Length: 122
Image (cartoon, rainbow, N blue to C red):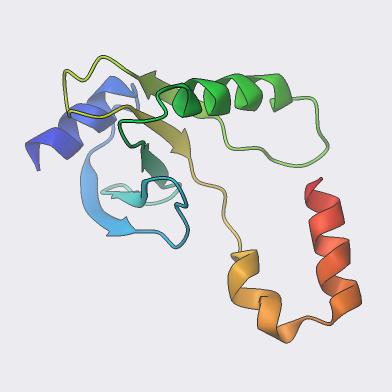
């Protein structure tokens, strides 16, 4: 619990952790939803494996490029930490966008609808 609190405190949210749960996805590392005591919006904690070490920096850089440049919401990186002072791995904390995961909807979509969804994501 102390590490979760330290991570959220570092992100500067001024909010307290109510629950941590695994999110679907996370192809290169673990991804968690951090629910907060005062309710939504939640945060996302993404932990990166030891290698390759540049993955976190690349994601933070691209996220910064996209902020306010698209007509759709983009997760905002609140903290990118590679100090390994809180946990032994690099991690980012970002705001969580509400909505459904496309991977859960894929079985319900036609081929045309799925292609359109991926096209919208770029």
